Image (cartoon, rainbow, N blue to C red; front, side, top):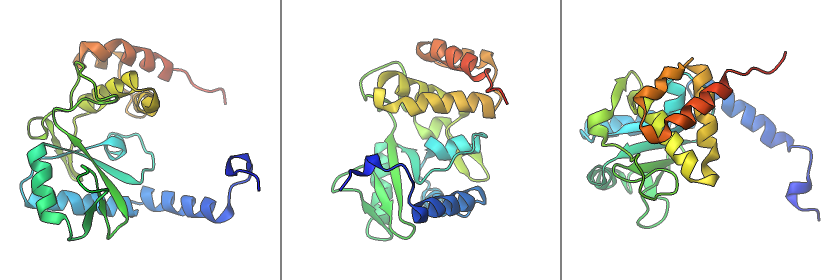
Length: 209
């Protein structure tokens, strides 16, 4: 039997399932969006400070791309409080003692980022995950990382971890989708400004039609 990576044709069922999920996502009715609404309602009801990050935040700021999980920034105390509330009540840990959880109702992974930790390779650097209580901005869909912090963290992550290059691509696409100016670099941490300007310049190029 040939290994799966030698196949050149996609499986029909998987292809159409993915297309259907993308359609539900862009209509706001995918399981990941239901899981997001459920999570934010729980956090707000318990007065636990949080900020939505990752791809759901990218969508909030105009870069429309499908995702299948929810990234949420919490403090360690906030994570402890959340687990006390929800474990065994529609949520389970990814594995015993893990930060992340799975919403069993919607089959969606909840990836937890901890305030004070370092993005990317996890090693000390100028950029750290901030306290959600001091930075989160409210929208009709919940509390989100500010755009500047989202970009800053993605740059620091992609610059320090080779397996996180998608974070740099996200910044490039966000420059296009949100029409960010080159001067946006001025509100970022100095350690990531040059990389932002480089990606911003790359984002100005357009494929010939």
